[in-house]
Image (cartoon, rainbow, N blue to C red; front, side, top):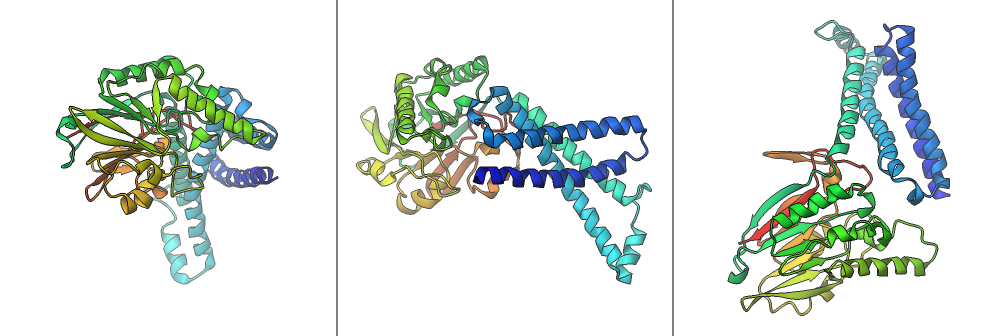
Length: 415
């Protein structure tokens, strides 16, 4: 019932936005021929009709059973079109507020408004703002469509991290860090193989995976397990679980079926040759020197994610090792618990955010909407002597693309 109510509320909001934006479309097309306007209006409302039909039927559909094309592209296009209209509507709202002030009636406001009712080019302000809003909204929609082609363009990030207490034998250690494979979203096996090949080309000493192997189900790995089995390194491949790995976002019908799925997923890790760390640590040894590698199950301080991690349990016994490396899926774990209570953990590796698969990164500036929820969302962060690295994700979820936040393979060299 809640899900159905939520769908109807969303449809109502969507229709209100559509009608609001349509007024500006009518304004900027007023001088066009009737045939051209009919074509433009038809294309515009066809997206709305498709979206309404989809969201009306969504409570009765099993989303997981929908064809991959529908889940990956149709839904993304419909939602992307809505988001573009929502952004455009913000510009129109500014103009409407201006006109309300003008009509509201103080002499000063009226005088100001009447003197500013055109742009420098003689275009009526309302038309100019309508074109501006529609242009930005269309640009955003076009950018999201363009991003479909970026989802397998794996980017290698090279990071060199210095630690005073790192044992000499581990200086120069090459770590490959990957995260958020989301195998249920990956449809191009050949492209994924190229990503795995790129990892192996770096000749890492150790490979660390920080969670979300699947979207929901262990069977998502059936076609890709052989691909990821090719990952290997002299010191091993180690992994942890992320929030999606527990199957919390699917209706299983019984507790037993959900538990069986998790058990199968753990088997997938083992069968690929990955050492899954479940609230535990292992000791890595090189030339008679050691460091501790700690792996916790999912634990986050943001959002409504279940907490399965037990860092105290995983940490216990690692105290004697001078250098400690923690794998924890959710970066909010770092400030919430690691920095406060475990300040001898030197480096934490995370994923989870994907950089929201959308953002801007240029020298001296970076931005993504995800930063309004996660303070640490991509790249390296420091707190005194402790460091956190957040991987932008190997795969994708929801939106089948990447804009400004390419899928990431991280090569970390300890020094």
